[in-house]
Structures are given as structure tokens and as C-alpha cells.
Amino acid sequence: MLGFGPMVRRALGAALLLATTALPAAAQQAPVDTLAAIRARGTLVCGVNTGLAGFAQPDSQGVWRGFDIDYCRSVAAAIFGDASKVRYVPTTAQSRFTALQSGEVDVLFRNTTWTLSRDTSLGLDFPAVNFYDGQGFMVKKSLGVTSATQLNGATICVQPGTTTEQNLTDWARASNIRFTPVVIERLEEVVAAYVAGRCDAYTTDASGLAATRSAQPTPADHVILPEVISKEPLGPAVRQGDARFADIVRWSHFALLVAEEMGITAANADAALASDARPEAQRLLGKSGDLGKMLGLDNAFALHIIKAVGNYGEVFARHLAPIGLQRARSPNALYLHGGLQYAPPFR
Ligand SMILES: N[C@@H](CCC(=O)N[C@@H](CS)C(=O)NCC(=O)O)C(=O)O
Image (cartoon, rainbow, N blue to C red; front, side):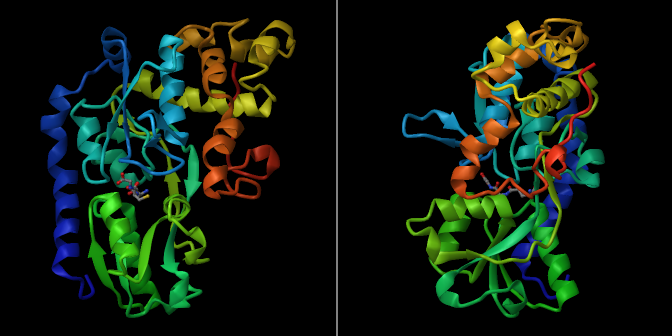
């Protein structure tokens, strides 16, 4: 472990323990038919982060808003025809998987990276990738650092229970960089530590860096370094073994993508239902075919989603453009524009 401090060793040990022990006990309590449990309860319970600008954060009225929140609302719209039937449960990086395994939440929409070990040994499934990301570093501009290669000897703030922590180790080893980790679980505390100068750099997903930077009193005082050291395909997670619910989450995401592909928006969805003669638009909006029923839902499930939150492009523009995330020429562009966001056919 390359001379890592006891804090990092403890955190890595705890993550391993979680991975190997949490599943059996938790699996006993979790509902097997998630859709039936959600319907009986009358609300979707969505695991989100503790408050990250653009992704999931309560506004001044206490109303949760953000990209992840609109995904929770989409699934509620698909199930109930009512996007407001959601209860949000904030989770830390450390607590999120236990919350899902135990049945405390139905689904996680919380910048979670799809990895092989999470997909298998944690008893989870990853229905989709709704945001392609990668890990980066942020430093104060006053430090004068312009590249991650200059971080040798630096103190670096990182959250435990994350891929971030593991990638940092791999990257440092491969790049011959020695650093001192400062490992802090809660987001506001790790950010406060970085702002207070307890570490020279803060590392997390680039989207998280953009969110944190945008929330600072003077964002221009902070620089996101150009290096991206990992792949972080972020997306929803559900419990393994409930294929129908995983399908609902997956096809709710695809509905957002196909709506964008077809130019169907929150504002024109009703008009499209009445007038759009394209066969796939008719199937998407539930005017023809039985695609919703095949998922155990109403045939108008995608119409409900689009009317509530718009299409993928609208959701991205509403929440992520304001925190400075570029979509054009990024992997999150539609495949039509050279990106990776691609949905299978609605047929
Ligand atoms: N994508 C990584 C990192 C996820 C993560 O938890 N990132 C932090 C920094 S952006 C976060 O979301 N914090 C929000 C919180 O703890 O509420 C993973 O899945 O392990």
C-alpha cells in the first residue's frame, strides 16, 4: 500500500468488510418485487447524495433539485404518472450500498460508478450509465499548480468508500507520486478541509469538482487540473435479482434519450402525442403498441416522464450546464453527435 497512512488503510479495510459481509443479512430484508412494494407504499424511495450542486440538493424551500433528482422523478412518473411521489434519502459514499441492500431505498441515483466488484459481490445491478465521468483534481489557483504531475509531495483530500480513493492509489503508484491522503467521509467536511487548506488538492469525479467549484464564493479561485485519471461511468443502482425493476429504471433512462433524439420535449410532448406520425414516437408516447405494459407500467409511462422532466438534453441543460459541465463533444452527447448516449429501439 505504498506507505499509506493508517486512515487510508482503515478506510480501505472498512470498504472491503462492507463488500464481503453486508450482503447476506441485508438481502433477507429487501423486497423481492420492488415495483409491488413501491406501489403498495405509494412512493418511490430514492437514495441520493447529501447535497451536491447540480445533482441533488435541497433549494431554499427545502425542495430537492438536480440531475439525480430528475431521474428519481422520472421513475416515479413512470410508475405512478406523478413525478412528485418520491421520498429522498441522503446517503454518504460509505452508507449508500447498505441502504440499497437493506431495502431502505428502492434505487440509488447518486454519482455511483459501475464497477465489476460492485456489480457482483455487492449484489447490485447497474441498469444504465446516465453520466460518463472521470476522476480529476482541484487545487487553489494561488498554489500555481497547473498539472497533476506537479502533485508530488502534496496532501490530497479524498472520501472513503469511493472508487476515487482506489484510483488515487493506482495513479500515484503508476506516476511515481508520493502524497499524504486526508480521508474524510462527509462531503461538506472534506470540502471544508480543502477550503481551509488542510490539503493541497481535492480529488473526486470531475462532475463533483465542477459542482463544488461552482458552489464556492469565488469559483475562479479554484482550478480543475486537466488530467482525468479514471473512467467513472455513473448511473443508477438497484438490487440484483429484480429484473423487472431494473428494466423500469433502464428504460426510463432510454425514454429520456429517445425523446431527445426525436426532438420531443416537455413543452411539445402533448402536441407530439396528437400529431407525430412517426411509428417510434407513437410507441414511445404510448399511442400505439404495448411497450409500457411489457414493463408492468402504463403504456403512457414515457409520456409521463417527458412531461414531468423533459428529455435528457433538457435535464442536462437545466442542472448541469449551470455548474459548468459541457455536454458538446463529451461522452454525454447523443451518439448522433459523436457521444456515447445511445438508446436501443422502442419497439
Ligand atoms: N463515483 C465515485 C465517487 C462517488 C462519491 O461519493 N463522490 C463524492 C464526491 S462528488 C460525493 O458524491 N459526495 C456526495 C456526498 O457524499 O453526499 C464512486 O462511485 O465511488
